[in-house]
Length: 362
Image (cartoon, rainbow, N blue to C red; front, side):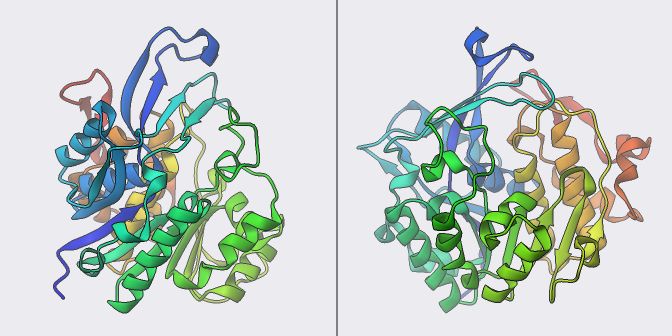
């Protein structure tokens, strides 16, 4: 079957409400700005901005927020033909704030939300077969209905030679491990979650996560041990995000150190907001992966996007466009020191995005 899409994203899609009083507690926020959110929604948007033909497979509510999600994706060219309007549930919402460089409070409003209600019957085999890659986010493995939908999509992908990618996207609150209001906690040990992930690792060709996300997938808080455990279940390419230490890629065996993988070291930046940086990274990584590029430069490019996202306010609006990737692909990238140099102004031209007051990567 002809591959008319580069990537289909299946997972969380929501509306984010960002508090505009940066430096304040959520309790003290007076005004909020509305943006597209959800990890899969951000990745669909980000890959489309980079010139990929991306599609979104999800449910949204039959209301204003659902229409907003659909229209935001369509605005950058995402195929929304398989976004289903759920007349019985509301679109998921997230309330977020930026208190300081290390504190980013957020609350997920996802009780019986539309995107989590996706079921196997929503998955069109011909739609999955039309893509080069199916990108899943791990949150949908936490709920029985959405999990079965994910497994159905993965079976179709395997049947039709579609590559499969997993962003572990571990949010303990969405697995029921924290209080409902604690969306900020990123890691809690859980044997049940580890088993749930390990049961499906063999279905993926590419697995992406932070060190903590590989800890939960591997069942160990030692990163090398965790990666080795993951390798027992899958021959996928493993991409470990290491924050300011950079990123390491393992295509085969796991060595004695994370640096034994294909490693690009990061640089420290003045952080405004880390939320969404991983989605920018995933968007850039998928661009390289779909084009059969996972070398040092292909990793450095999405890392640069992730670093840039830490400097700005809102995730999906800041993911680099195709023109920027074309420019940097011609550069000799050995490290991310590029972000500290005048070359950055060649790579990224900031200008106001039409319709909002925030600067956006061109």
